[in-house]
Image (cartoon, rainbow, N blue to C red; front, side, top):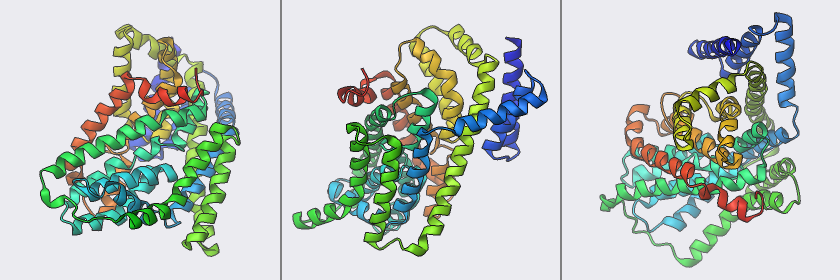
Amino acid sequence: MDMAVVAGLILFFSIAIGILLGVPIAVSIGLGAVFATMSVIEFDQAVLTSSQQLFAGINSFTLLAIPFFVLAGVLMNNGGIAERLIDAGKVLVGRMPGSLAQTNVVANAMFGSVSGAAVAAAAAIGTVMGPRQEKEGYDRNFSAAVNVASAPSGMLIPPSNTFIVYALVSSSSIAALFMAGVGPGLLWALACFAIVFLYARKRPELKSTERVTFPVAVVTLLRALPSLLMIIIVIGGILTGVFTPTESAAIAVVYCLVLGFVYRNIRIKHLPAILLDATRTTSIVMLLVGVSTAMAWVMSFALIPDLISEVLLGISENPTVILIIMMAILLVVGTFMDPTPAILIFTPIFLPIVTEFGISPIHFGAMIVMNLCVGTITPPVGNVLFVGARVAGLRVEPVVAKLLPFLFALIAMLFVVVFIPQVSMWLPTSLGLIE
């Protein structure tokens, strides 16, 4: 157990010092894994073992889905679908108080689920919705807060690269995880709806007077339908067994490429830049997966998960208390770490503990992903927060002030998901994906 303490301390301080010095987190994790391995085996073996684990971590057929879904997302981001989804959202919520802000929520949920990236949703939808809301008299900081708060809902609604990473670490069904994300994703959007409703109810000037005729509504929804069909094709194909998640990702690329050409927003000359953008994102994710696998190996070798399990169970053997502690830790971690590395680091530590209490890995996957989504909009390092503020041309501080009610509501929804398993488990269970 002394070895576990030494290796754990070396790992923790190596990563922490690297992050504080501005070293990329993937490099910090990789170096930390090597240094920690050196505390239990010799230098040459440590470097060799870490390298082997890195390549073993990315040598997975399941992970092929990530570059395909990333490329599909980039194609969609450049394919002219933001305006179509915003118009569709306006039709759906056009008569509600704060209709433009509610439209932002709907459009982010649809765009985020299609692209699989909260940052992309915040940038694409915020660029269009910000000026519209300012013109209608909305406070700019509030508009930016709505955009930031609602963008991560698409990371929960399938398809989701984050769930693919969790599936790899936990050896869980991707299809079951995709379905488990639907309930939390809808809860996320409903929480944002509620805050916007309460805000707009006290401001009659924000109530929409625009009426959309039935023919216009039909045409608008039909224009957005081809973009949304990608979700149906991908998820429907996986659930019916027509193709695997990896094959569905490849099909999504072809579909998005065709759609971009049909909409005339993508041309042959744009493809090199699109491929380069997708390659950059994919390389970051894959490097994180590789170095985190090396880190997970040294943690397992040094019995670090067992040590943490003993510490947590020493505090309490009550599953409710343990879950609250885990969620609190992840909420803090999420404020300075992106979801992918956080999942890769903490899933091997926490999952064995929760499974001892009889908690399904699918349910825990919904918990951990939703928890870390909150971190993407929370300072000091929330990337969605900074992108949303930058798109709006605002400083982060006043946006955070308007964001606080959303954060409180979303954390409340997180604990609904934690303590009411049916929210995430009902759909995959009903579809026969889990028993």
